[in-house]
Length: 526
Image (tube, rainbow, N blue to C red; front, side, top):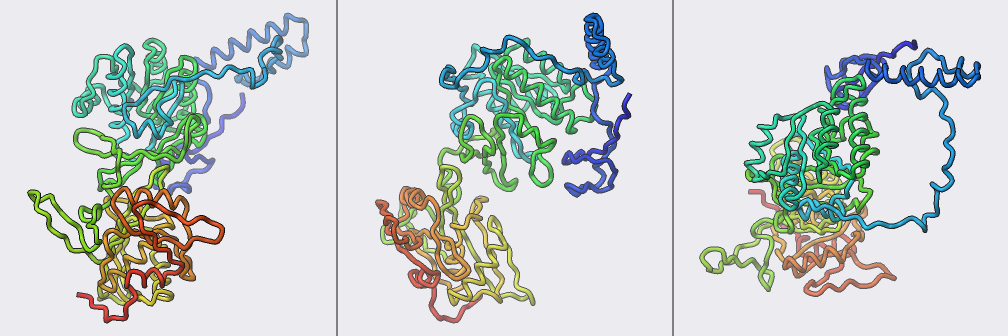
């Protein structure tokens, strides 16, 4: 028998090699590498293979071909080494694609419009969807609430929820909290792959949720739970069962320290849809993105809100990323009217150091409010603190603002942040970041009915951004009346969006001049 190779596997990221390391060379974790033997069939599986090999050898010897029988009597135990004979009668299997019947598939709604949008109008029967995310982000809560909504909408069918991480009573406690208690919602707590497959075959559920791929173990192969071999075997078996019985499977996946999906890379290739459930642990906002989708687009994003009652979808997330004084504005742009205090209208003064821009995420245009604070530095090296903005991008914009905008904050402490965990890392946010810095440095507020869109180059030029019209239409819907945008190039049409006064600027200096932020005044830092 061939010698079994010894490998070492990292339990954190799935790295494998032939040499042991105290620190994983892939993810950098200490003490996560353990020895394991190369995957091979278990004793029962080897017995079945040996029996099949013996039958094949006997049939070959009975045919009178001694040479073939000698070749079949090999030392290895893998039946795949026996050459497969060509199958006859396959002429009619291949047909022109124009003659293949196009069947309309009835998708299953998850009960969340945001989830359905990401999946492409619902779950396709027989598909396997991998939902990955950081620990505690809300993957299990989202899928358990999805199971409850599907069970409520289809009382004539059963929905199966398999948990390999929690007991059935623990899942029942969470289901009570999020109001997902239904008689046709079946709970099972097991880590055995054979048990899971048996449940799928016996119950034939409308939807199956397996939490998670790293906790289910197959008895037919060797390897630790969560290892590359086990994860690949579990995924392959679930995919085969899903395709055979047209049962959609939502599979939970863990992520490594760097945010990638744990386990072998082939896991993402095997499944039909890969979704990333992400968000900041300090905020309640959660975003669901599809990085792979065989049945729909991959540029959609779903917004959810995490609360004590579970997860709620956010159909209009625009108001989340704006402060309370940044959404609606007065007609003249001098301030904002607040009528929340008993119907009395009070004018709220404008604030320096804030500017609103719009980013495009999927097919959505989301507002991002950038807030900046510039103060006198008491340290030899001025401090730069950012939240939701790339720090290297900030350093570049500060240099461009000093060189081409004549507004210097090089010797000041700069604090830059966004509202509600929004991300202003798109190049289209450059102009808004620069204007917010200039507004804070010059102590001149930007009118709240203004938005800024544009990428800033190292030469101080304002470059165009994609989907500009889509951003302007969303700005007009939210009540903004003026927009600073890049000057249109020759050969392109002039944008005209009802309700928005467009101010075209070609350089950063002209943008600052349009908002009166280039004044030569003594900068006071109280």
